[in-house]
Length: 155
Image (cartoon, rainbow, N blue to C red; front, side, top):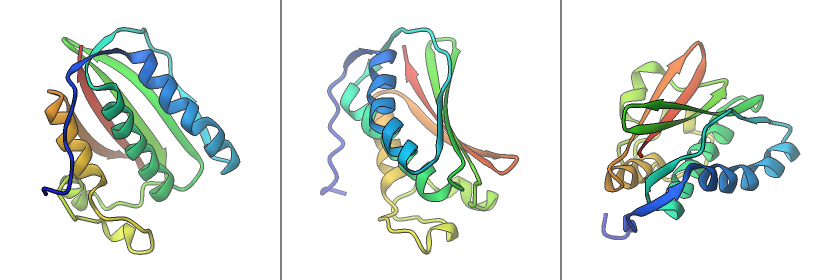
């Protein structure tokens, strides 16, 4: 684990900065791949954490949505709970088995759906470590054949 850098600079950033960084990066890329990409409505606010690391976490999740989804749709949505903001990346065509879901944040664990896809099995593990360092959380669920990965930021 020493080769992985989980350093975070604890600070504050606006939700809009995170959303803009991620959408700017993917809008064109997904357009070229003919994947529909939508960003839901949200109210801007200050979040606690490290902007660069947060962008990295979201990019990692979107990359997985591209790799393992069916290429139809990826959507970013937002919700709010007491002292935190939730950002959810949803993609159509989830191929992961429900039984594998609890293990996707462990290191070097790759779902059976990953056999033909390059990867280290470390992406979501890194995301979880970074979110914990920023006093946040990350979880995933499968509903009606769609994958939902949600990151929780303290605000």
